[in-house]
Image (cartoon, rainbow, N blue to C red):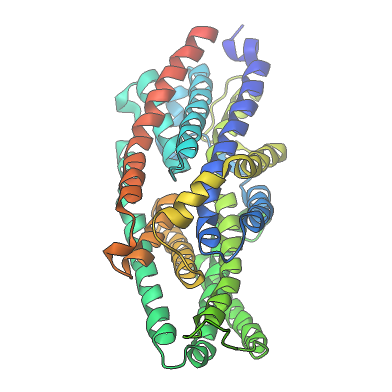
Length: 421
């Protein structure tokens, strides 16, 4: 009797527990940093951020999390290498889930915003090296992922820097910021509508039967952006731009407008994140279920049962509610001081980077993208606006994420192999 047949039920129970733990880590760390700019800029309260994230992360994970997932995330090892030893894939995926989740727990306790994708990638590399040998790892794929450490923060930071500079120049440095806001805010409303539509179409609709090409998504998003701009112009006419006492420059009213725009970008980022990063938790879980139910057959892709997506979405929500505050504080207030206009520039830049990466096939981390965007906004006000101590701590946590995931996965892999094999 094979090990898979003998311990199949135990493997599935462990996979569900470790998968939920991993989804909890995604919620505690990754979702928290996606909401950090909105909370840090005081556009929304922490309670409102949690409600938005709970709804949109769960919808993204459940509706658009994917019916089929790669057996091994990001093509790091070839599943064909495991056809004769399916139990090694089960041990490896269990070890990878537990290792990545443990690292995310440590990082979240410290308030470090780290990449859940890099955590699971590092863990899978660790199990592959330990169980199959270093030659079986596609180091080119790992190199591409490592390159995103530099590419995604730089790209998002540059876009955020440019975006905030335009807001500063066109509106805040104008003789009458209110009049300038009336003139230029519709342009930013169009950008929000366009990018929110693009993020949703590119990241979130393939699995509910709407599979648009990138060009179709682009054209549809332009139309949606124009419609939202029209609605925005009508609503803006109702805004009474009044200077309040103590607001000599009239910035307060203008900042409120950007606060409203941030609500839309926050919802889009939460939906895109839920649809994209839930695979880090449910991918290995679906692979284990597939191997156990097929009696040991290893396929290149695994079907994700609906209840697994609900488990992943539920874990993300629980993680955010129970432990998200520390990472929200780091991203929202630790790196640089944010206002709604700065937070808007950072969130829109991060969402734009996600869209560009999807179109070009660049492997990026939503965490690195968002932190890079916040850095770009801070840099637009000069180096003195940045907290370099917090930034160096974040950079250190990014560098050790892959090796930490790998080291923990090797430890758990041999522990599981010793128990069952």
